[in-house]
Image (cartoon, rainbow, N blue to C red; front, side, top):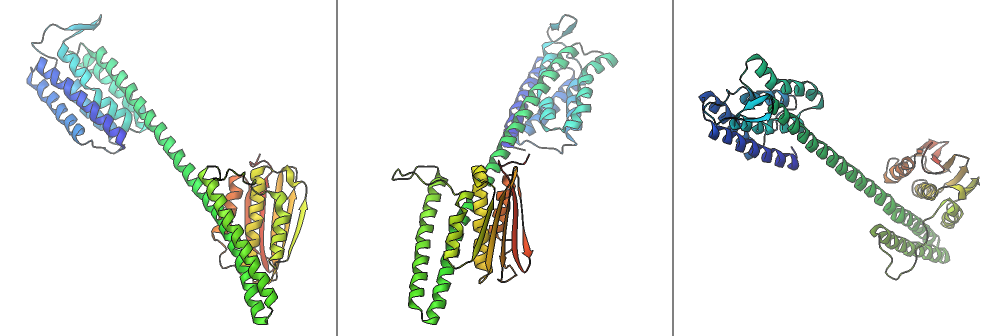
Length: 384
């Protein structure tokens, strides 16, 4: 039971206690009436002290049993002359108080019962007061009972709808937070992982050149690793600023995120690190939506980074085919180690999430002695 439901049940139970106690005070006779109303007060007091949540299947039966304590109570004796809530119904103030005391029953029923149980339980409970008057008589206020029942059921239904709307909003907020966390994880992986991969590749080249005694190659490789490291630090800082949603402290305008049109520069970067890459672009990359263009760039970037880490000494080919409705991206590597130590790592998961978030798909796996990544993305970020 949620905190809001507990507060509602506590409050409405106190209301029932107050009105049932008033009914006893106005007319304690006959004794059976006092006993039944007193039992009802005890049950409501238990709910007001520590609300009990019965099984959903038991809620309608418990409501019927508790309501019976009131509706089956004998009519008040020796009470002052009654009032006339309806022209055709006479009754005492004590009997009217018992009708109002039934509020907790209907609130419990409307808030806690299953919808399919309400379909049969509500008609049965609504028929109990007029049924008693018809079969046993001596319940002149049964129209008032029915009126209060409908009112309290509607009030309980309003509480239930409010709770459902509140839970739906919380669920959407949790889903939004989870999606934002996945987005942050992808961006941090892109900002840090790719830069480190390229830097490590140059450090490896420097180590191999040092073994050969080629000092110029060592210097060039280390300088390139340093340049990539500095660039990665700047990218991380820029990414953190964007994630915070605030403007850069110096007021400078940050460059736009990369798109598919930036692929030639990306390929040139990896060629400079020693990874042979062939790039083929068909169609118009400019026709891609900005989110799709960023996804294309990140998928190619992650795939080439994986090739550099897991297939050293190999080469890669990148093909981007922009059609009328979809963009197809294929990245293959050759000549390196065919096995992947981290085929289901964060990078591959991030690529699949990027594609799925835009309404596309992505597959990756061994192909022709190497590794291949195939992605299909809609041009506008949502499949028709």
